[in-house]
Image 1 (cartoon, helix red, strand yellow):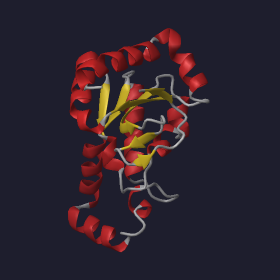
Image 2 (cartoon, helix red, strand yellow; image 1 turned 45 degrees about the vertical axis):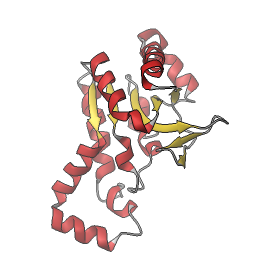
Image 3 (spheres, rainbow, N blue to C red; image 1 turned 180 degrees about the vertical axis):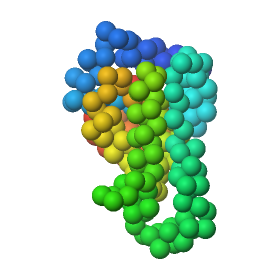
Length: 184
């Protein structure tokens, strides 16, 4: 399928899933989760984001690319380079939260919380920027705070769907079994 025919059905399915009267179904279909995984071909990412911004003008679009830059800026470029060189084989030590230090993961969760507190529907976009950080989408959607919110999180998920139904994130990485409602 191509974008012109595919996006209408996907956005219609998303609207149905997000309808107030259907929100309990998200938790049921997602085994207690509170997120929607919106799957689309990676090559069409910008088109899907643009269309989502048209359809949901009052939503909060949380751009993972911008969060990554904000995180690096908070450390400082030179310190980040040194840190990255030191932990190159263990990127989770750079980006994932630890007991004593909040990192990129907390920054993203904080942006989701802020959107929820402002009663805005949070859309997580450009999630491909997480690749290589060891922060998996599952770490975000299964975060206890995200799971308890009254408003679901919509995760834009650039992936290809294989003939056997398997979903491959960014076209090559097999998707985890997320606690999310799937819109594909």
